[in-house]
Picture (cartoon, each protein chain N blue to C red):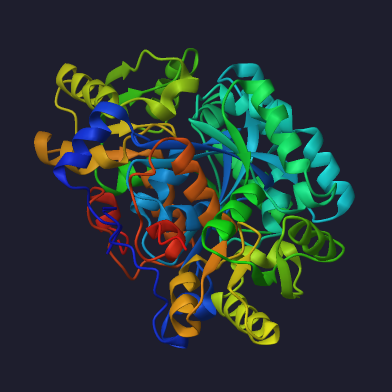
Length: 263
Length: 259
């Protein structure tokens, strides 16, 4: 009784692009993922990603979201990028908001440059992608629903403000970060609605954190509140597909951003 | 185009219980980089079934590297246990064949002792699956370099199988995840033909891009096909109590068409 609409058929030989091009025949998006355990990053990525788009992921070994652990993770980024490069992804994206807000505004560009130099592969950062997405969709006044502990929420707020985004609402999900992969989706759903309601005239909602289980809330929230919703991982997929040149298709069901790939 | 949109009932389950509302399968994944392991898992897995994965840091398929990865197993299992998966499965054939028959049971026990969570191994799962499907004489299509292939053959023989043919892809293992599916397809057919009358085909190597070949090979060759990732999903769902659910499109095993 699986709801599987998936099909295990490869079609008639070379008519199936996977048969000759492999699973990532459209785009293979390299991802430096802070967390040591993955569950909801891959789960959400493959909810949203079209056929032929894969994530090539390695971890930066973060076990707890503290400044010390994040700083260690940043120190491992270049070696991890070289490891990723052996599998030849089309681009490399540094995951995490904590990884770039710790060093403050502009540190995403510095880290991106280091990763590109270490790996020889075009690079970006998930936070950079989210801000580019906000600009593209005309979001100037933002409501944030965050799963991070302090000091990362304050640092993230500063980073967004310095990026020219006015943070008019900021709500934090009160759970142990290590349990966010298994929180029911109603928790971020309610946090987002609270952030939106408390804000004055927001243009959109932003969910930072790749593992935050929110992908299937994007479309319902956009419809319910008549707004625009961005998540870290959704912006990573959008940016990665653009960097890999896979912009000739639209993704339906995960918000305005992924319907705007060609823009 | 995109993945299927959830029906209302499953959306309600997501809201109330999260992405792994049916089963959260812990996985100790040897490789340091993941691409086709997760890609293939989410090709097959029904809604509500997730993979909770951490890596053992393996960068190459040598005997030494397996021993280094094995030295990480208990710490990595404790790390996984922090996220409370329903079970923990040790990935890899190389991880258990390097020290031979029976070491899968030994590692399973160690993982359970370290975490208090029911454990198994991907190799154990594949062997259980092949037995249940009535496979005795098997054709193996592997992505591994030597000496792992010889060790795997011995392990399978000691588990009671007749290894009628074993052929290796013969590519750099680090290029496996972007290998076209044609590679696995041609190799499996060659192994099957060489075996001259096997009961089934076995693809070890969870990252080996093969799951979308399973159904096609079963139909074209009138046989049974088991892959490491497919057997891991099957075993994990069973251990998590989600085995009332069958999956269509990825072979007899996930449809529970046992012999």
